[in-house]
Image (cartoon, rainbow, N blue to C red; front, side, top):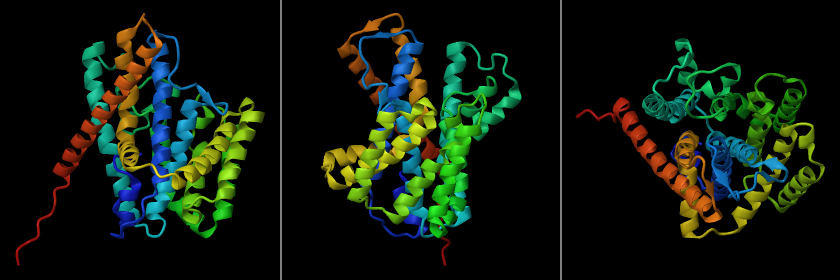
Length: 358
C-alpha cells in the first residue's frame, strides 16, 4: 500500500523489469473502494447525516465490507512483497525502503492533519499526556486507542499491523521458500490460537498475529502459483459460498474474514488475469494501486470533514452518489498532492549524488 506499487520497486533490487501482475493491482483497487465505502457510510452516521440508500452494501458474503477490503489488502501486500523480494533480499536495503516508503508520508500527513485540527477544534491535546506522541511517531497510535486517547489523526489500526508484518517479512520469506506447507500451516495455527485465546480491549482482528495467515497466504500463492489455476478459482468460489452459507462469523469474525480473503484472492485473481481490462481501465487500476497508501492515509480524515457539512440533512439517492463521488475525487487529488510533497521532502534529504570529475 505504499506510494508506488511494489512490482515497480526496482524489480527486486535486480534492475530487471518483471512482468506486471495486473490482478494484484485490481485486488488493491477493489480493497481501496471497499474500505472507502465502509468509512463513507460510517462518517455519514457519525455526523448525523441521513441517507435513503448506501452506495455499497454493508456486507458481502456475510462479511463486513470494510473487513473484506482489509483482508484483500493483507493478501495483496504479502503477494506484492514476495513478488519483488522473493528471489533476492538485502535486509538493509529492504528495511530502508520500507521506512522511507511508510514513515515520511505518514508524518507529513499526520502533521498536516494535526495543524488543521488545531485551528478547527481549538487545540490538540485535550488532556492527552505529551509522551503519547511517541505512538504517533511510530505509526501505532491508531492501534493504541483501545487503551486511552492519544494524538491519533489518521492511518487507522491497519498501519501498525502492516508495519509489523513488513518487519516480519524477511523471516516469513525464509519459511515460505524453504518450508511452504509448514509455514502456511503454522500461520493458520497462530491465527487460530489468536481467535481462541486473544482477549483484550483490542479486537482480535487488530492484533498483528491474527492477520499473519492472510499475509503468508499471499506470499505462498505469488511464489508458487503466480498464475492462478482453474481449480484454485473453483476452490475460491466454494470457500466463499461455504462462508456465506454457514456463516462462521457467528463464532469469530476472523474465521469468516480468512475464508473470504483466501477465496476472493483466488476468485478475483483468476478472473482478472483472464479478462483484458483495456487501456483506460488498466491505467485507472494501476493509478489507484499506486496511490493506495496515500489514499488510505487521508481518506477517513477527509470523509469526516467533508460529510460534516451535511449534518442534520437527509440526502436522496442522487445526492448520496454525488457526495460519494465528490469525496472520492477530493481524496484522490489530496493523495496526489501528498505523494508529490513526500517526493520533494525525500529529495531534499536524499539528494542525488553527483559523480566526481576524473
